[in-house]
Length: 511
Ligand SMILES: Cc1cc2nc3c(=O)[nH]c(=O)nc-3n(C[C@H](O)[C@H](O)[C@H](O)COP(=O)(O)OP(=O)(O)OC[C@H]3O[C@@H](n4cnc5c(N)ncnc54)[C@H](O)[C@@H]3O)c2cc1C
Image (cartoon, rainbow, N blue to C red; front, side, top):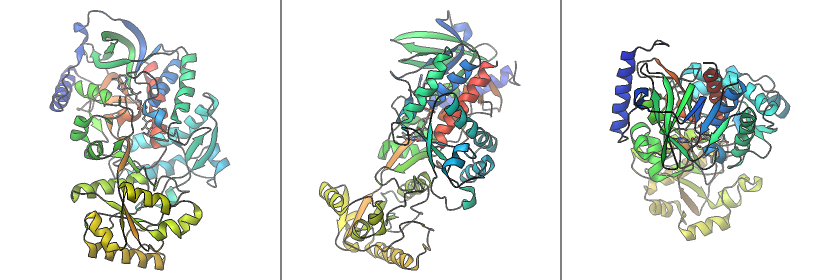
């Protein structure tokens, strides 16, 4: 058996995987080739899922001359990538030199930031590989796929990461940057794949992987129009079905923050991203990596998403009425803390601001206040905001100790007067807050879970014994280990779809 995988270790891995998915209440078992009577379709490279990773894999594999088939569960291609802003991070591109002041940024600095933000949990080889590959993908998207890059911005600071590692790296293309514009990228890449001969079948859900007696993945079982479809893949199967975004059972077991969001927040990923590729990989003994975190942000204020937009004068408190995080740090960093406090103290956290924040602050003059007096009052009326003539009255409304909230407000105002946040190093919107006061109950807007199948830099899926599962690949958010316990900043995920998708397509096509 090739790739160092013995039949015995495969069976051991498979057994562990099946036990794992069974424990999640997901009944299933790999199908061995002997059980298959006939193939309905034969291809070289089979791509499962037509989001950003799937179309990138298809484009690369077809460019290498392989016959490519993409099976997509939904009625349209694009997945969550369609809903995204399509922004992508890369360091050292010609566009970065053209649009920003960062003239000597490097992939090494970029990787160092991602690794530090990974808090010791990321696979450094994967992160370095991604950072090194990113600038080339920016060129490929422009030169081969016709994407037109038009601007670049940066993401917000992370308290323990050296500022010298930051740069404006988030590339925005024409028509991109707003939710829903990721479809431009998907369409552009699929157009290339299709011109190379790649084919796609929609409304087709892949259910199981098929292996031969040596454990090599040779195809899949899918369902189309209520009928079973057996698809043979001579060069390999690439799983691109994203993470466990909409799967509560898997989240409960693998990702407490995703589970919390699915119960208490708003998950914006497509409904078809139910962790199928991860489950299918686990069924045949694949290991997982990078689970735990997710892409959370404040859908109301967008705090910490863009280094050009300061966070308006407001602070976040827990059930004890105290601050616990730097509010203008990058969004998923501060949202992880919101999750942790919500769980640790079994209650909501609140964003506190005053009439001054929305009427007389610099934020109002500069246009980045998240509410006007009118919209705030309307939300008080509708129950979306809490209101108190005094801070003590507000404390009572939200059920936190009044003395603590008052002490926290006084401390904040002292820091504002001194021009320095002595608690958490807040950099923007550090202005005096005066009443009457408002409180907004924080609700996570979840852009998907982090974590997936364990891969190496060739996107080969690794089993629980550390061996490659032959001819099985994972890309995009279906793969884990390349993002840490929280999302480090916009543009990481979609760049990961291009990078790991293209790599998987190239490696599989070369089999
Ligand atoms: C509103 C929003 C904005 C965002 N903005 C950005 C941004 O600007 N930049 C950034 O980097 N990140 C952004 N993100 C995150 C990013 O969009 C996603 O992490 C990324 O696009 C996921 O890509 P993917 O290819 O791995 O998965 P997807 O794009 O979700 O594709 C997975 C596909 O697999 C299909 N599928 C699932 N199961 C099966 C099955 N069994 N058989 C066949 N097909 C299956 C699904 O239907 C889906 O089409 C945003 C997310 C959201 C929700």
